[in-house]
Image (cartoon, rainbow, N blue to C red):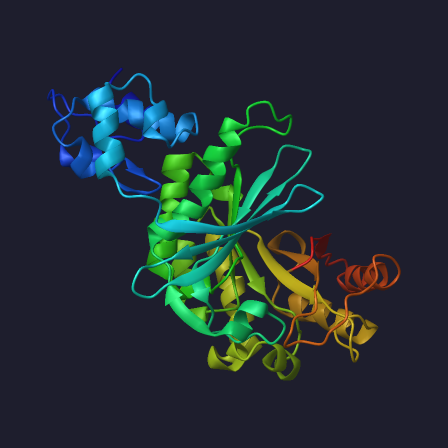
Amino acid sequence: LSERKMRLRYGLFVSSTATVRRKELCALRAVYGDLSEALEGEKGYRVRQVRDWIYERGITNFDEMTNLPLALRQKLARDVPEFALELLEERVSVDGTVKRAYRGGSSSAFVIESVLMRYDDGRNTACLSSQAGCAMGCVFCATGQMGFQKQLSALEIFEQACRFDAELKKQDTDSRGGGLNRVVMMGMGEPLLNFDAVSEAIDRIQSDLGIGARRITVSTVGVVPNILKFGERHPQCNLAISLHAANDQERSKLLPANQRYGGLDVLMETARDYWRMTNRQVTFEWALPHHDDVNDVTRKATELGLLLGRYGLYGPASHVNVIPLNPTKGFKGVCLPASGGRASGVGLLSSAGEKKGKVCFFSFQKKM
């Protein structure tokens, strides 16, 4: 194969020399660390063999890489660091959703969560954390009630996706398809406040796991300075904005960061500019708790439709994702029942989106 075809096929820089150069090795970092030093001096095709085991077959145990010489397998097992994240706990729900708690760090240990959601139509979606804790302080969010602990590295973000991907590929008998095929940055933390690490992780998710940009979504509370920066850096990825209220007074009560970044006018203008720049539909997340007249009344639904219409964010420009909200320790909202309340709330929101033929599209998501 030509160098160009090899690069497209393996994601590597292929050298004409017999041994591996460092720039080739930098393209192959295992989920548990950098293989550069361990593979220094090996033949170039050995890099491609290791990559195939990890990213194509889902094998991360060097002892199982049977086409590698025994001496090299032993060297890799001895010299390559273990996973950056330690699995503390895993829970599997009745619908197959996998929820995990990981511990990371040495001197400053931290705990994060990631979730795998599997669907009968073949979608395998990982929900990743970008920070340990969060500084945004959203009153209904359990992570926001924890406070901020640390920024995750690009490797710690990427590893959450890569471990799910490897395990799915090993489950080749599952009828719902192998491998991870969608990623959402909607776990712990504010992704746009850890921009560089999140951006690098997105690059690796695309190049190493083969997940297309249009199947990657980053959610933000509305960090205005980095929204257009995200659009420039990843113009084909999806942006989701946690809206949850259609006026500044109510939004600031739920999301204290609202005023910090200039309020709704600045946020909606930036969302419109993002849409015009990327031609990518903006998703607005709208939590649907049921307490003290929040979100599930006609006035709120109408207000949302008018807000989107005022900034031209209707039709193909936006999508409203309605999310039933679980109560948390610091938020006393009570979940709407499965029928009646939720259906009424979604119906009101949908009808409110139809103003002078300007239709907003709505969907319904699993609980937060």
